[in-house]
Amino acid sequence: MIDFNRPPYTGRELEYIRQAVEANKICGDGEFTKRCSAWMKENLGTKYALLTTSCTHALEMAAYLSDIQPGDEVIMPSYTFVSTADAFVLRGARIVFVDIRPDTMNIDETLIESAITEKTRAIVPVHYAGVACEMDTILALADKYHLKVVEDAAQGVHAYYKGRALGTLGDFGCFSFHETKNYSMGEGGALLFQKDEYLERAEILREKGTDRSKFFRGQVDKYTWVDYGSSYLPSDLNAAYLYAQLEACRDIDARRMSVWELYHRELRPLKEAGLLEQPTVPEYASHNAHMYYIKVKDMDTRSRLIGFLHQREICSVFHYIPLHSAAAGRKFGRFHGEDVYTTRESQRLLRLPMYYSLTLEQAEYVVDCIREFFHFDGPKE
Image (cartoon, rainbow, N blue to C red):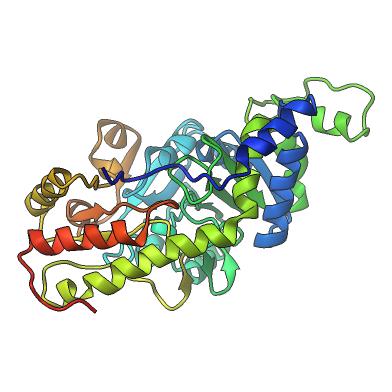
């Protein structure tokens, strides 16, 4: 069986976990947590990087640090994971959904300005499949209307916009290190930001409302409860697993990219024959091979293709059901303008197997089965 996903494993994870155990420091902010944060600072060009228990929690921290209040409005795409909206709903915000671009599946930056009202406080671009949103327009709007920009870069670690790492362009960037991501710690994430003014509040928030971080740095002789907070700090065991993969990032990136490029090359004749559509990567974006998807004619074709591949022991899946169509989406948000592409494109999209240990031979087999489904006998590229 070719699974849709397998968590990455590079070989040094257990060694590092053992080192964390032997150091008698398996709670948060141990040696491997610090190493992971240092890696992100050095490799991604962010001033601050705080490891969290999930991208969901990184988003919750960003919403709090953005001072989102009940009744505020936050603009985002509907085609995203529920956590993107939940983080702001927990602060009492109203979600304003905007249609997506059919080429990248990202928020349509040209529709954002008309959705801005006097209640708008933030824009949340989601970098789908590790392909950057058009950030110049978004950042210019944020500056014009004095809005925060919170990048949902859950899928965007080591992906770039005009040479700048995703997650470092807005006020806050939120990463995921879930088992489905390029680099994993099982469950985990990170919050990135550049401004010094956010650091103390972020540390207090992450450490259950205490100044414990200052205590460990020797800045206070005891730590106490000083503000609102929660437990957003992951175990150093999780960080140890992650650090082994951050060290091996170039190998992970190269192997994923080789699979992505094989899919893209070998499926191109089917695109040219009008049987499917392939991902678009704009010139401004450098993606990270997080995902390879195709789009077929309609939901019925997609369902039949999923079943066909399953019969051939290949697991392929669709993705998000648009949030605005869900009961909670209707309760906590509204769709601004017309839903031209969000629902239609979501019903056509199919994700193919993509993970670190997937072989090129297995990817070739996936392509062969898709060709068989479409009765396509044309040449491969």
